[in-house]
Amino acid sequence: EPNVASAPIALRHPLAPEDRARADFYAILAALFADAPSAQLLATVGATDLLEDAEAGELPLAWNRLVAACRVMDPEAARQEHTDLFVGTGRTEVNLHGSHWRSGFMMEKPLVELRRDLAALGLGRKPESTQVEDHISALFETMRLLIEGDSTRSPVNLSIQRGFFETHIGSWVFDLCTALKNCSLANFYRPVAEFAELFMALERDSLAIE
Image (cartoon, rainbow, N blue to C red; front, top):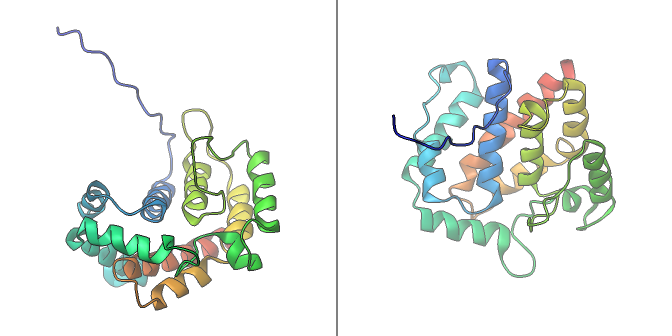
């Protein structure tokens, strides 16, 4: 037999199907907001299956629209749109940071509270990261980690997930989605915002009754 070095195995904790879907949706949204979507990311999302029960509700329809948008989106056009919307020079068209929406200013009290809560969970910004902790991408990635854990930590219970979501995401994410949907510069990011809004509403309602 050939002497093949074994590749590192990413440990995935056993999760209920609905929690696996939740974690995957958070991961995709985190990637789409973190930076301009690469050709590989667009292809990956575009290659996922459409939800067959799309007639059953708005969320499956919105997911199918997002998949369709990824299938036809040019990566360079996506990069330019991401820059126009979220980077810019000076004031951005749509701010992706929670402290902006919750207090009107960057780096304010909500960010201090978030850092405290992340520390209590044993989490924090990686030294090499340039992203502030209250960036929506970082918050979505935190929710993914709380739901599915990783090789060094187990998933947390729903009460902890609910507390983190209600405090640091649910209080402002709908304002962000509305602003993004209404922004004249949004093309690809309009179906992203539409899906995010519906997924966030499902998270808010389902976590509230757990």
